[in-house]
Length: 251
Image 1 (cartoon, one colour):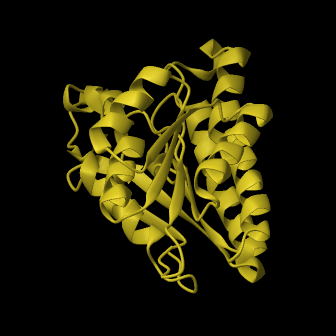
Image 2 (image 1 turned 135 degrees about the vertical axis):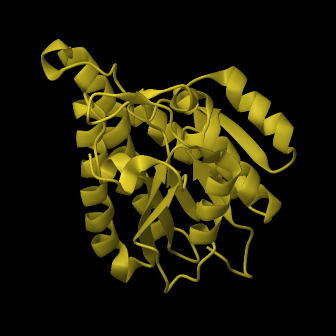
């Protein structure tokens, strides 16, 4: 959130690869200080070194309340405040019929995608209400699966639909606190996790078809656009997608 009174500080979860790394780079180029969160040390350090100054890597599991407390404590200790939380960490489950999904797979996806986003948002609200000047912004990564499912994706789709409800509830709760909350729904950004899109993925009609992708850097720019809006403006829900992907077609 743009301001002239202090340097802006962003916490980015899932920051070691893909969308998180691209967003860290885009914000850093605009002068933001970045706290980059992930579960693995090596990717975080690689991204931090590639960006350069103004990036603080913190190893944390967003599904663990103690890790989340450590993450926000590290951000405040390093930079004094938190202006932006990008709730980006997320995982999927194997694309199999529901009866073949294990309870453990379901719970793992819920723990990271939904509970992790809630825990980080809770910590962000606490910090943003207490700091001076108060307020900030939260951007949740909804994915286009928050709108339309892929076949055999009950854990991921259910959590991403829930993220939309979380976004709207937080937006309402933050309205009078100077905390602005929005969501970005991303479709087929070219990352290691979506490499299979170019070779072929299962469609609703049962066929396996290659899908178009877009540069992940463009997603980072879109998040930066949302982040730098003035405090009284909000993109509640943005969809950014590869133009050739079949999202808006009929199955």
